Image (cartoon, rainbow, N blue to C red):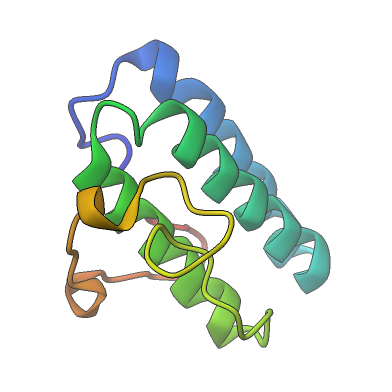
Length: 111
């Protein structure tokens, strides 16, 4: 999702680096550091993507949160809607359908 987006390479690079670090942690069997990297990814998306591409930002955050939740991460949803850490006011929050996101986790982390 990041690579296929219209984000500049300058914006993509730190996001991809964080996802690579998460993948490396998961491949080592270190779920907690991997989930921490995904949380850092969500924060970067809020800061770097949400101001200009709110729908894409929500889709990326939803995808990361699916992985965190699947691995037993915090039950609290860290998205724009209903979270005290959200990046956009509720009236500007985009609507995204996370059910359309496919996340292969064997050898690659696709967001």
